[in-house]
Length: 279
Image (cartoon, rainbow, N blue to C red; front, top):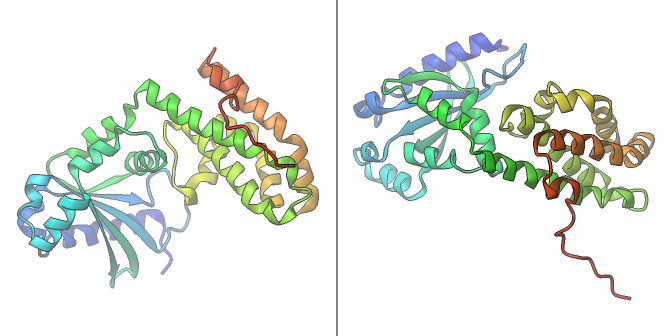
């Protein structure tokens, strides 16, 4: 059954409200928050996917009232993943059960998984939230420390420049082209989203969202060439290799507009371990 996003969300809402009124959640349903996070509000889809992600958030005190196997696992790992299938709508649903404390701690960090968590949360919608956690979590997701955002940006910039070092070898090692180009492109489009949105989506949403960013619009034609090169188009591969330095410079200029005077922008490879070749 093909659904548009509105129909998909209605079915997911119905499934979620029925779910938390079942054992073992019904006794704690007033203290549970349930959010639909994928597909999120930022997705621009005419047809919704047949799979979804839902977050169930519960505080550690309430976890103690759950059956021992589940409570023990949650208190030990802070997150449990369950797979569900809704017979009425034929939706496959991945349910991620978080402790509230784990989610709040995650939002204080700026690594890749933490940035993707922010993105999911910022695009999420409420299924059930009696304690009104959604608004406070959204606020926390938006409050990235300036130094944390710079650290995340710097990390991606260093990765981009490190991968760029290997682009000139592609003409001699064509079998490694898809891997290197994919890594190069993925980190650039993560950076596009990070600059504009303060977070970035998981891999399946990256490209479509990056195209709408300021940097993504500047690099749109180059993105297309990289995709062709990954598909082993030799002419596109040549264009990517010989134009990537211009792309690096375009990104450098934008970063200098944001973080003027930072050494890591203009000398990203300064602290790289030197490569020694044995003769």
